[in-house]
Image (cartoon, rainbow, N blue to C red; front, side, top):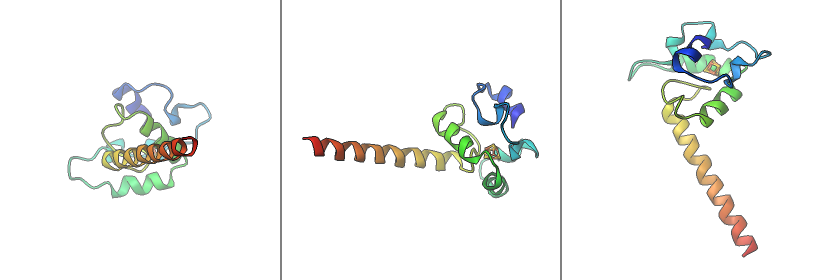
Length: 105
Ligand code: SF4
């Protein structure tokens, strides 16, 4: 996926750009697999993501950069799945903050 970095205009903080980063599995096969046509299958790329040593870092980066990653599978999750995860995390943070406020009130 490193050639996609320049195509998509991504910055150099993406996990697989670190000098000591393990090899991203998406860099070893056709990167188009991670950007299927609408309705296309994501089964194969998600399977590879599950085996990728960069999965956690990749997903964390994608969650922190929604504008740059609004298309395709990143860290094993589709755009829709990442959006759902962001919403769940935001809801959890809100609930935790509300609990903390109620404890000091
Ligand atoms: S987790 Fe998936 S999208 Fe991310 S670097 Fe690995 S293979 Fe590529």
